[in-house]
Image 1 (cartoon, one colour):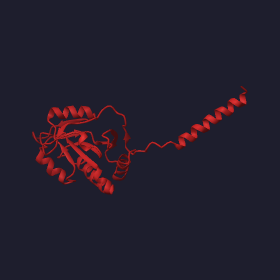
Image 2: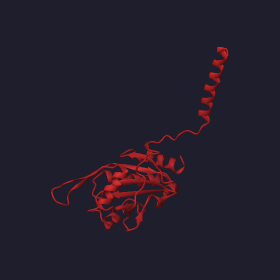
Image 3: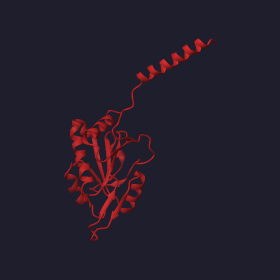
Image 4: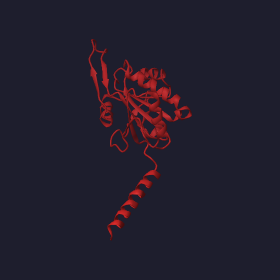
Length: 199
């Protein structure tokens, strides 16, 4: 086969590839870190602040944000929950399809009563989960999050160091995104909107 024919064939293949790429639906550009396909943070089975056992399957059809923290946290936890509340408002009607799940890393002090009162400061629809110490160790391992008790001056004045980020799941219950602390309300709302639209 003449060399010119080889060149024309190669050019046709190259142009065809470009056209196909242009026609294919683009991968969504998330502001958060894309974890699609990750083999961890797959589920939890923990009691909520009313005593009901919850799993990710309970929230099928909704986007789910999972955040680990504690009620006596001075900054990261209240800031994150306040931002999630604002995200719901920014989403308008779609905000009802976002579930925020708060898993305490301080079950010793965060009793169901304390958690119910705390969550009502942000959004009564937010779900607080109360693991036992052993359940907390297991779910922290599954979600690859860090937590550690830092002693204070008294036995009950300790603080908890913990991972300051959230996981986002799509309406099918699949782990999709890792959101960094402080990324802002609008970028986070945009990511949730992508997930709700099936991206």
